Length: 222
Image (cartoon, rainbow, N blue to C red; front, side, top):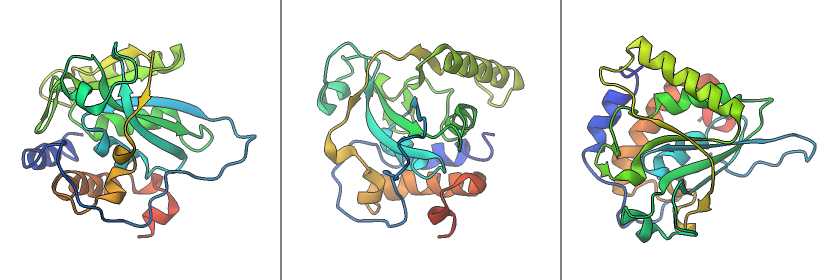
């Protein structure tokens, strides 16, 4: 697993960090808001895999994912700002809240993507992004999600997929605060910014190769 994704991603991540100035560019082909019948029952997953720009860019491309919102979860300060979260004193993690159609993609499949697109063995760190807000975390919304996350993590620990132990925390969901507007749909709006170009783009290209059969049609045809 780490051979497929994490090794190359970690090497690239040392080049630049998440918080930085950006220039506006537009990448076509990715959709965040998909029209769907009101009769379809949707579900929600909340994951932290480091910088939420990376997490958002990956999960936006999956067939069955309806909407991805970057934000903050798990802290003790209501409606925190990005600057407050970056102070490392609020307890929040950068996360993405993922609304999905369980008839098209399961929570198990989302978990598989979660584990494969970041390094779950580095405590409070992903590459050059360091701090508790970048921790690897699953916020479960019900006991079913908790049981699946616990089982998947236990099996991975036993498998020896990584040389170091997994440090991902599995925590009950208690709050979610959407991040500021400029953080939303970040990669698609800032594709040529240094962090997007050197960190997110290589990660996304590897993800698209590994999960080619699960991508939205307009992505897989690009």
